Image 1 (cartoon, rainbow, N blue to C red):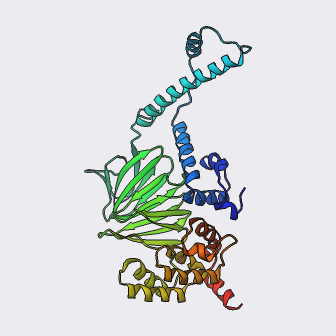
Image 2: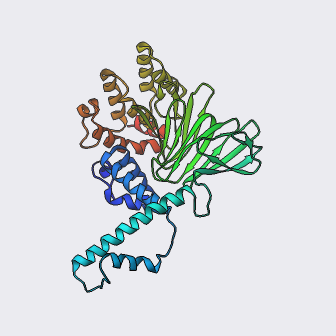
Length: 382
């Protein structure tokens, strides 16, 4: 439907409906998600259509009563026949649309707040997977419901699974504390205070969020684990799809197979593949979470020497996180493995032109999914 080159150079408005309904092939769905992350125009249109889709999903299938149309005709001054003038047909269309809008609004409110079976939809189903997890002060041996504002806690002998509305599940490990913050058609949000959770989400991007003491995890359609220790230090591991870790103006996009650490008052660090060398990962930690310029300069030198083609994931993120002098060094290290595509210049990258950065990132992704050691060996043989 659109090539890799087109991913960030052309809008994807025509594909939004198909994406919301899960009709795009897996590869095109991934490219679509990547595009709307960086394209404000398409993202605004996506959010509007996503809202409409989610509202429509809450409506029941009910037949309109016979009296409804009679009432509309009475308001229009008598029966309306198919052979009437076009203006009358348009009036009829507007009247029906107005009535349906009111009915839909009332229906969404009622069925979202109460559910078609009379249950409260402002809560999520919780299943005990072992032991007796606690919701508030109440322990559950089999199942329960987690309401907005309530905490779910597990001890060293208990685990649980949460049904995130109709969009996925979250497994809660031992010694974990989570709270339901929001559950609406356009946003589902948990808070992970401590412990470990594993999420499997099959919704459009940016519908499920997890707040932690040091970052917000925004799901982009994926599976991942998220851990937080007693000091608020977090670690994200993505097993499928993509996750965005965000705090204020700092963001890390983490693909499948990669990890990213977070620190309170700092936010997300730089994503990396866990098969990177120990020296590379140790140097990255110093880059992310130490303020000493001498330490970070030496750490960057070590990283550039240790980097593989697969590690361009990390280096690409560093372009916007280092000074201008070091940015040139990072650029050269990336270009050694994957030269920038047509339309991306050295000058543009060094001034952090967002469009060029995204085009290059799109081309770099092929190296992120290949075996890094094999690529490096192939490069060294040239």
